[in-house]
Image 1 (cartoon, rainbow, N blue to C red):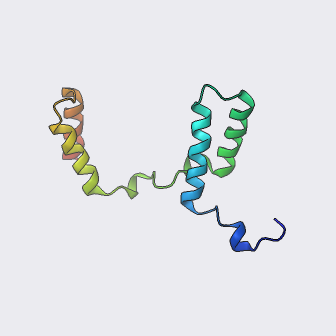
Image 2: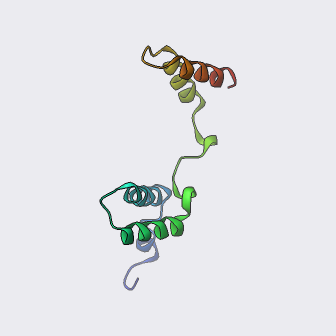
Length: 96
């Protein structure tokens, strides 16, 4: 881009910014009110951004084990959760 410094050109290239762009395109693909041309544009943009790797913070190893354990415990103790979900949460908690 003419007239912009390298820093200004890269301002929207942080992992968070790329992830936000990818989220917008993913939302467009799920929106029944968008045209097929728009969806194809979003598919191409997602591919250019790196596909599923464009989403910041989605890697399993980046999850905080304490937060994961807390979520599993909340699931186990929630009276509105099915017995199957409680059992699955307990198994995951036991395997941590």
